[in-house]
Amino acid sequence: MKSSDLYQKALGLMPGGVSSPVRAIRPYPFYTRAGDGSRITTVDGEVLIDCCMAYGPLILGHAHPLIHQAITWQLSKGWLYGTPAPVEPEFAELIIRDHPGMDMIRFVSSGSEATMAAIRLARGFSGKQDIVKVEGGFHGAHDGVLVKAGSGATTHGVPDSAGVLPDVVSHTRQVPYNDPEALESLLSREDDIAAFIIEPVMGNIGPILPDDSYLRDVREITRAHDVLLIFDEVITGYRLGIGGAQVMFGVRPDITTLGKIIGGGLPIGAFGGRKEIMELISPAGPVYQAGTFSGNPLSLSAGMATVRWLHAHRGIYRVMEAWGAEIGEAVAGKTEGSFVRLGSMFKYFFRNRAPRTYLEAKECDTGKFGEFWTAMRKKGIFLPPSQFETNFLSAVHEDGDIGQIAAAYQACI
Ligand SMILES: *Cc1c(COP(=O)(O)O)cnc(C)c1O
Picture 1 (cartoon, helix red, strand yellow):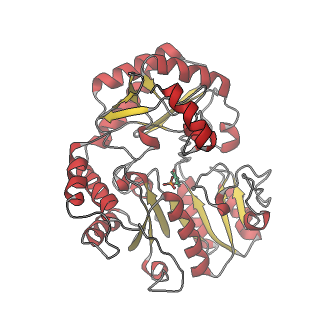
Picture 2: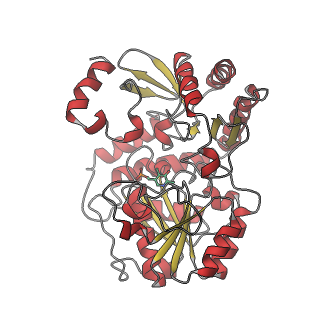
């Protein structure tokens, strides 16, 4: 069946025809038959260079032979036990060693689950009720974080979704990104704030990059007010480098959440932090957290193969950085918008200056982005279909791919 037919069928069976909203490309999404390296092949026979990489997890591209091998090996021994498996402490040790903010870790099955548990843990540890998030920051699809554009730093949140209780999000405060004064002012007025949760580099509306000292300021302010700092590194973990944003920017959070890359393309999440905090997690402590699929050996094996590969090929981060720079050079003369990149994350914003906050990002011309996206697709490049989703490169993109992507950017803007 062709993509248009599959979508017609899906529309009657699945809300919006898709399993996750961003995939509902208009007029219909293409269906992928296979992925290989940096490319996906659609059921309609198109071959596209992928700059979406499943929204971040696939840092080694599609169907990487080493991950394939790790999964196959595990499959032959069964894939879910309901008991601990040897890969858990092994992978835990590896991740903890890479992250200065982690003494202990709990594996879960998605990034949403990780942030949900991290917030509960922060409340359990501090005995305080409220949390602060960044306007436009995305931490998954659970109630307490589904709140975006407050009208000001101090307003109580308004739910982003029907079905989310105003009572629940009234415990979620917001501050603009890159605004340490707003955070300082909120924390000095309020005394019931358990944690500040932040994507150190905003990945779900960007990338939007932190100003020079922003993350260090955030660390100092939260420490001074006895508020836990949660780095949501579900995107940035192993994406910006080994140890993610906390290593790149030299800032140690109290709790870190991970996901995406650490599953090697299979479902995963994890959260970790200081020992005294993590030891409150059940069964060691009173903060309940549990999951049938938590720490499943298949996801962990795929993730560990990925992380080991990255350790063995650390130079790849410099290579990906240079690829991003090459794409940036191709659009350097364009005045239509602004090109933002960090490592293997990049985006062209249809706003003449790079956004520093959610509200600035919202000023982008999404109509122009839509036309650009379609033109890129015709040139054989698959970008995430939203002005606000980060583009990703992988370790298995090749120089030739980057040349094609750069040429397409130059031609399509
Ligand atoms: C993707 C993402 C999540 C949610 O992870 P899922 O595995 O989709 O539940 C949470 N936080 C950030 C920063 C993310 O990018």
